[in-house]
Length: 215
Image (tube, rainbow, N blue to C red; front, side, top):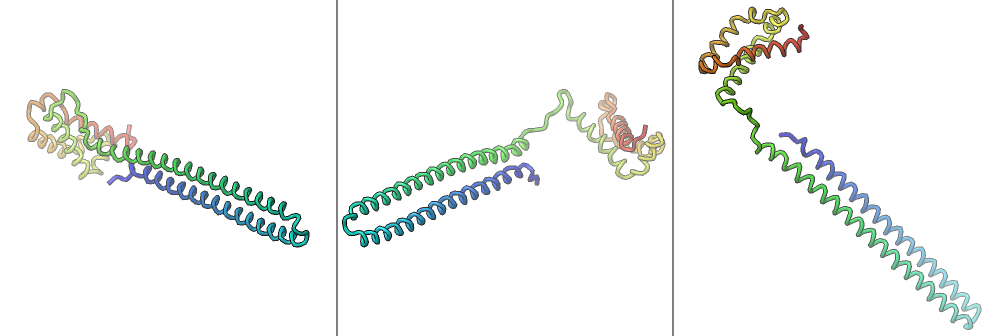
């Protein structure tokens, strides 16, 4: 089974998961940072309140109104900061979610395209050459098969004959048997019109010469 068409979608899916995890970690870090900042502000506010209360005890009740107003201003500033921070975090989370959805949609589309391609290749029939009858195609295949069998069982002798340019002399017995077998399997009218077996032998010799670098 060929797994090559699925490598790219799997790799994209892994990258998508890594990006989503990184974005989630970034959002969590932002939330933790905001919480730490709020906690620090609350501590400062508590410290300020303690200092103000101490000032009240020292200075008397005449400053109570100003201190109360300052306390309310600090509370309002803290509330405004919290609302602004929460809004920013919500907008960041929404943007991250939208980006993740876009990436997921793209990967899903790519997966569908890759999965469909092998099915299309299976369903598409191989093209046939126009004007060639099935009998001729069968004769061609038989000729190539006969020649391949000769090479398979006589590799050394075949290469020796090709190197010495006397292939048909060295392999005379096998060539004659090949012609007899071809004649017994292929109708006479096709043998008279074509030379598929000779073509197969010539193709073999040309190919082997290239492999053996023989002129």
